[in-house]
Length: 225
Image (cartoon, rainbow, N blue to C red; front, top):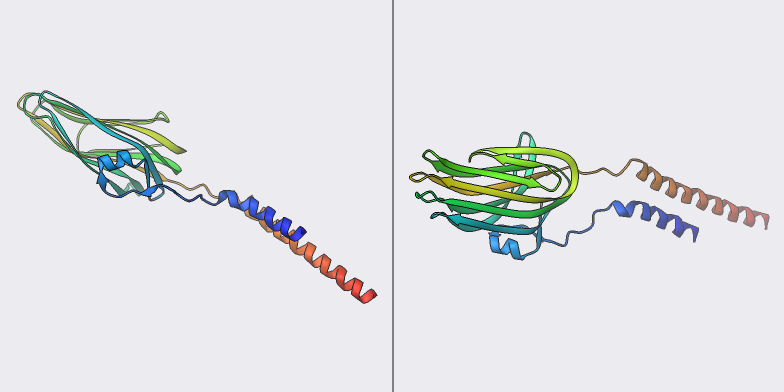
């Protein structure tokens, strides 16, 4: 009975640090509508949920939603993993605007930074293509033109809410067009404290000592008889 008790205690010590299974589906290239409706998906240690994409157009501006694609890329020696929003936002040539909103939640163990990049082609004077991004931990990213990217680091955190606003404007006679908005994150793992394996080892050691003593006690009783 004591043997089973010690083994069970050791199991209780170790088990809480074993990762729970991920029940979300795997993130794949799919339409924006699919990501919005599927609830959540996982990719390379990250879970994305609560995806919402919308756009507001004025003055002849237009927006066409494409798909969302998971990606991994190395930036400054760090692997950034996340999602790419593929779309077409075009201002037209009559002073139009397009304001794209992309909102989602991301979780992982543990998030240590965020990466953002923008692909687009503004032409002529007075054209603007920029990104403003805010996170629920107070961090933010600002991209002032296509072809740029930025990484912001923060205290490791388990989950974040992300709000991205991508804005295109062009004065009459100019144009602004954007097509890919990327958002990635890097992860770090929290190691099991060194004392826990030692504690588990100690418990198994106690079980071994107890077993040896019981065996010695039985031998002594047999010899005495």
